[in-house]
Amino acid sequence: FRVIDLGPTGDAEPMWHRTDSVDFIYVAEGSARCCFDGGEVDLHAGDTIVLQAVRHAWVNATDRVCRLVDVSVAASGQA
Image 1 (cartoon, helix red, strand yellow):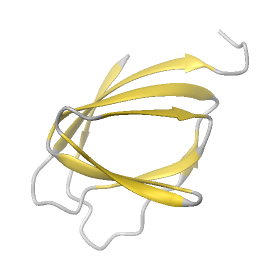
Image 2 (cartoon, one colour):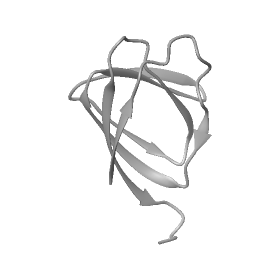
Image 3 (cartoon, helix red, strand yellow):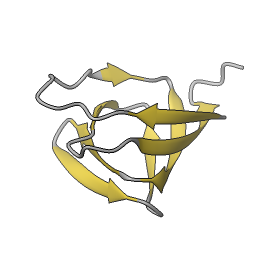
């Protein structure tokens, strides 16, 4: 479990990464875009997304912090 404060990213290139987990992400405050191979989705306060070991990146094109609440569960049977 962790809380992530995603600051405005401006014109910076997204930081692509992959996790070996199932990530349950709730947008507690603000807005952000989740980019992934094959698409992207805009998320706003109150939205939830589930990512299953997928390559992805976060973009905050607003001028405010976006607060994400993340619960991750190992996807490969690792503790």
